[in-house]
Length: 486
Ligand code: GBE
Image 1 (cartoon, rainbow, N blue to C red):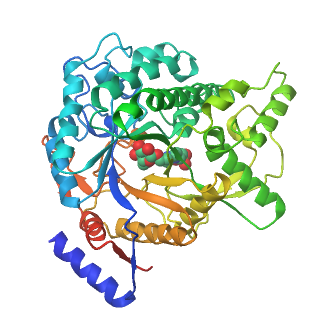
Image 2 (tube, protein in one colour):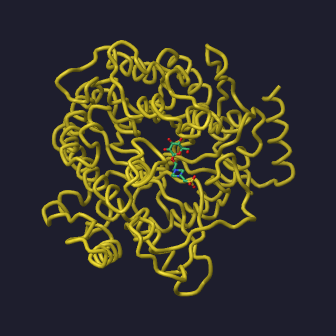
Image 3 (cartoon, helix red, strand yellow):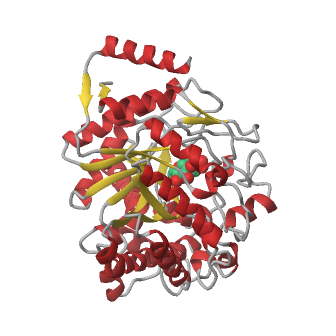
């Protein structure tokens, strides 16, 4: 039924609009998920507790009071997931590996054979299905024991992450040649340590997110070098990380607003991007200057932004094989009228962000449909970081409870058109990943916001999956390698 409707819709769109645009053969397509959001089996065999188990079990911060105890039950149903991937016809599947499922205590002295067996089985099934596995080492589920030691604000965490990375490369690197160290460090640090938007909800803005970022950037570089020195020569393959960013558009063409929007880009994407992707390395100049100045004014003996040594700057610079990008939406930015002396990242940034009320919305308050922002952001990366190879690791749209998801189809149609525009501008995008394969645990929003191409019935103990209209739409794009011009 849904299928027929979609075909009719597609024919209609093509009949009305006519023109088809073709994707270059060099562009591959995938879909993404993350361990805590889909796996469930939170205490299966010897799996250890992680920070999302702790947060969901001990606070009332999740909107529908739900948790990821069962989620999509992918720990037991990954064969069904692979069937869906085959049905879609994707080139690759981006999933993440749960640290505490592999290392129950967080440390590498004790490995879970069951945890390793789970990912072995998933990876082997993907390879049999001719789908390339793309694995993320850290999609937000830190072992709780390591959080008890301070999590990412503890400098030792970089070594523990390296130990984990080594175990994972050893166990799976013979079959997995595509790696991401971290998913969205900005979210990990700003929302997890600066604010309360993600676990561990530390809420110490102005201090903790900068410590987190500092250690996490080093952890990324260490894992990159380990792979580059030891595993790449044996296993081939490539490794990077994926950064999230809104496009920050000046609210007006006044110089002050243009400066504000550029500053927002540097605090957001540049915070993690500049140390790794620029030729100079290190944090963006504007962050170093502003945070140092404000820290001294506030009576701190030194900048709240930690400093990298010259050796560290050189060690971190260039630790990428591609530029990973997660993108959903756009923000308008202007210069504020008063300068705040408060202690926080956003006060350090010192800009005002807002959205155009005319932009169409989604089920998520933060997600507005602004496809041209995607094109501008891709061009910003091209211009600031010497036209790197860009892989889009997430892009997608949320709604509530809806299998006939025409708004999601429209979002993908518009954002993929913007991607084609960016390719025409000379941006070097080589892969595009839809978030997400299926509805899943949407962090603090629980199961109230759905991003899936497949619908998951969370009331059914079997967690039945059904393709939405958008699944057929995505499949048709992958088959025809064309899209209708919007
Ligand atoms: C990704 O993050 C995640 O990688 C993925 O796990 C998640 O399911 C997916 O997006 C969908 O959310 O006060 O509400 O405006 C905005 C996307 C918070 C990047 C949400 C932070 C989107 C950045 C706060 N945003 N996120 S507010």
